[in-house]
Length: 123
Image 1 (cartoon, one colour):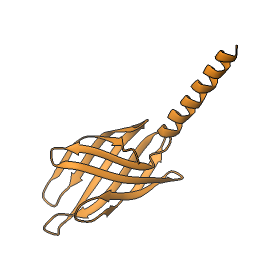
Image 2 (cartoon, one colour; image 1 turned 180 degrees about the vertical axis):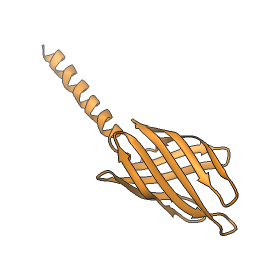
Image 3 (spheres, helix red, strand yellow; image 1 turned 30 degrees about the vertical axis):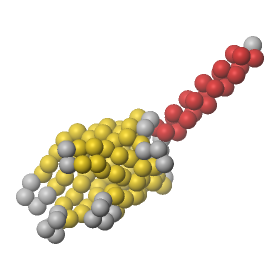
Image 4 (cartoon, one colour; image 1 turned 120 degrees about the vertical axis):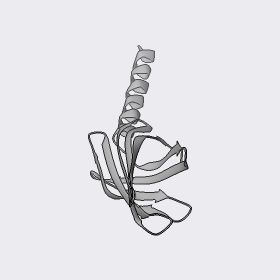
């Protein structure tokens, strides 16, 4: 009986930990593309997501971030190496330590879109 009770408590705690991860995108996220590695540092405040996209040339601020029902969407304005405006937009679904969805980068002369998957980095 005692083993059953301990097993039940372990299962409940594990389920709560997994549920908490699904409910909070706070942390450092990394993904790999053909152009290199991307890093986002996110923080959840209510249903608003703030943070930065980490880059060698300087961090970019996350704007218009929303997280509701496991769905996340963020917008990260920046600039091209030539100084023209560009915007990174990410949408996805948070499942544990993974976000899967779509990414769109709006450049002055084109729009690049594709699938996106980020993994939570161990801080």
